[in-house]
Length: 92
Ligand SMILES: [Zn+2]
Image 1: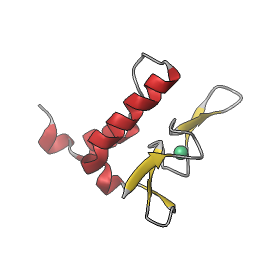
Image 2: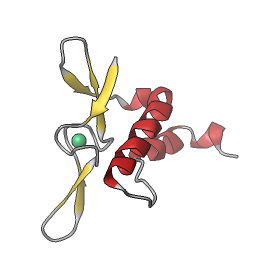
Image 3: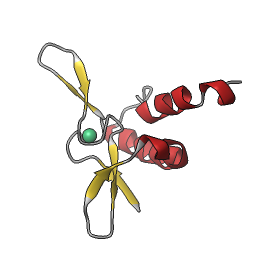
């Protein structure tokens, strides 16, 4: 299964409203990336998959930010989701 940049938010995972507030992208669930199957159909990455695709998303996000010439911190919603899901067992 390929992972591609969300066509709706272009990898951002969120939109900024005119008033400056932000909202998560509905298409990708705020992740910024979606699965693309062999038929070229995109679908949202389920939260249960975040951990196993986190490394892949990290690479894609690093590449995207490099393309943008952006050097600041990335917003990584999938990592936040992972931290929430594994708070009890994963915290060091
Ligand atoms: Zn999106």
